[in-house]
Length: 170
Image (cartoon, rainbow, N blue to C red; front, top):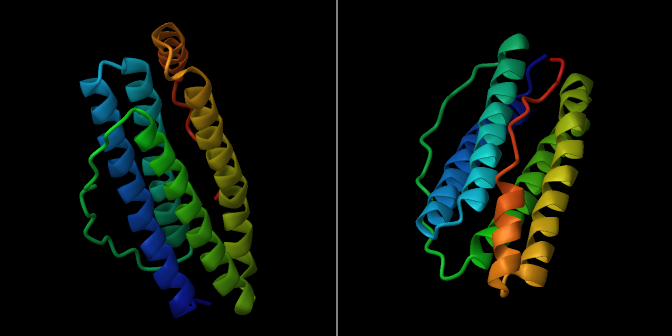
């Protein structure tokens, strides 16, 4: 049975996931402008993941006869002063998304919507990985970012990241 609060939160999450993709494309553009194509690639892959997360939320809603209402997605309004700033902003954003998913889980729990809770279990695990990846990248940048040779090596490492579609059974 549909719970309006849970349904609204799921719709909001679709918007947040699409916004995340926009945000990461914006970060990718920043790194391209800086000549750091590996960093740009890393964020392009990140954007693909976020787009697919939005699509998974939409598919889940459709599979459960919940109305999907696509909302306006704001454009990212960020200016970065250093190569570190997008990395820290991405960690903050992932923490925000984690809180949002926890909010949906809590709402589903309160109405005993076990199906939605089970669906969200994958995203909770995924968010742990997202936060760890962002934290690891910040640590690497703190270690190597001031040395041009090390930064070059890190950029080359990030250039090897490829997209792997999520495997989530709805």
